[in-house]
Image (cartoon, rainbow, N blue to C red; front, side, top):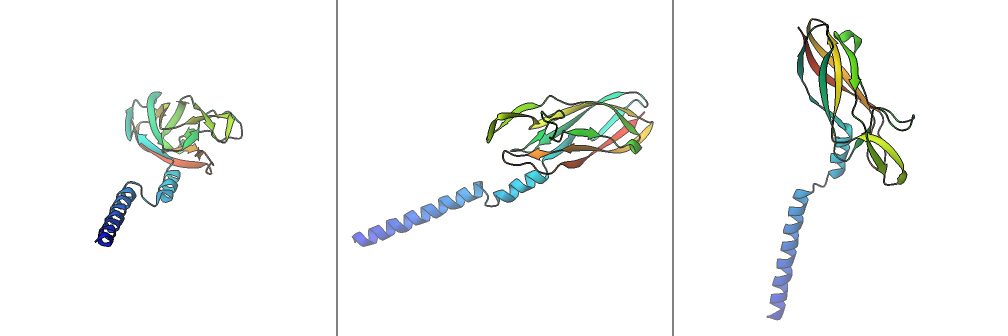
Length: 171
């Protein structure tokens, strides 16, 4: 009888462990390295605005909102070292819209765990670039661009440029 009870307890314990492991794997997917790679490929996301209406021929303020993926940072517009790639917004000359001015947020000081003596100027989370644009009369689908370099705590990815689509109506 003692052997039957110990066998039953062992089977029950093994089943309980398997159930716990299944619940844990549902919370923490096994492909987390794939998820991290996807975040690196989409390091910065343009949030809004999708469309703006501005007076034609007059400088007009437009706030452009972005989000840096969790666990990553990008260099600010004014990185602390000249070899670092700054974040820069541009508007193609042929778009019917001219970027009159762009005011970037100040970067946040960031220290790498491997080099606590070096401070970087970075953007993390959400940030806003305050622009002044001048639009010709009419409807312009502008394919602005944001160039940046994203990094995690261990390495930086090659610089990347994303398209920032915005429909600008000049009235």
